Image (cartoon, rainbow, N blue to C red; front, top):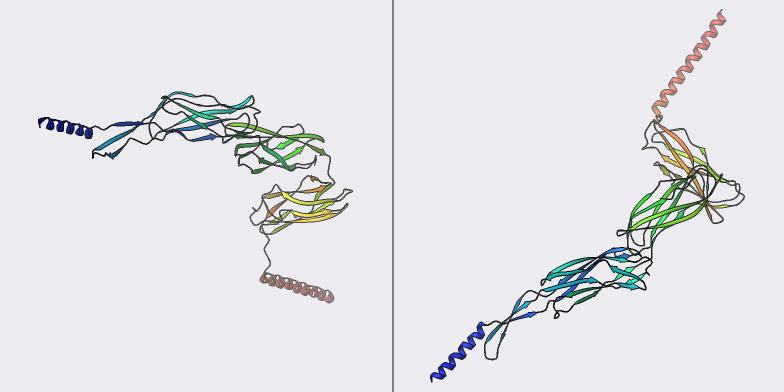
Length: 416
């Protein structure tokens, strides 16, 4: 009987031990690449970019689970999350024959990454010059300390593009006159798959061609967008010249340039030109000033698309352009412009330039500009009915006085 009690006591103590003992189980860390960024997002051959990779341990914090056994004994099990120890993180090289995209560094003995924590790593990626455009997929490799933990391999998509920022002529006559300056306009087109920054256009200095301004800063241009830039060309000698312009821009921190080379001929004069026909030397403030020009086609052939344009002015001019259209040989057309003087200052002089653009045999031409000037004076007072009445009375009185004096003098002569 005593043995039976002793056995019962041992079993009770054993069961009590089961209730008190809490086993611990360890789980493996879930290390992964949670995100990455590439700046700039698209590379040109020879470019470098900063790749930021975020390594994340996605395992949750320590937790407990409770289960009921078949012998009605409650057992509690604690699950503890392992932190991961990173031995090395690196980016593999992606090849295009003997050309490649590669990282310039790797990280050794990084240390522990706790559960729920993330660590960013930065790599400088470089694309070789003359590498073929397309998509490349170097891999991020994360080697963990324990053999029981699975290493991580994650492909990174990197696009390489040969598209560039181009300079396209928009308004550029093939021939310009040696007298005066001629305006030229170009369009900067971003054909690249991403935006570019610090876009600047500079004409190359050429002897006998004075080009201004010396550079035009455009700034940022989005992908598939464009901006116009204008220059003034003032030649000092005749002949044919090679006009060169350079557009420079940045893709991230990478500087690129592209050149535009074209030919332009400077001639003595053109056979089409505007001539100022009438313009008052002064105009009253608030009065409308009308300027008339005559455009004469002295060529032996027809010209088309003839347009007279005022420019280099802050004046309010109407219309902004005068369209004539086609002109036969020896044709003469008139064009008139009206200037609003209500906002101009009395006592100041103002000037305005005009030029004529036209086409002949599919070639675009632009004439030298003509300039005219005028001054603004105080507006003349308008006559009122009362003023008119007073003026008429004064004139009548003067006439009566003259007549009376005439007859008086005549009478005295007769009496003598």
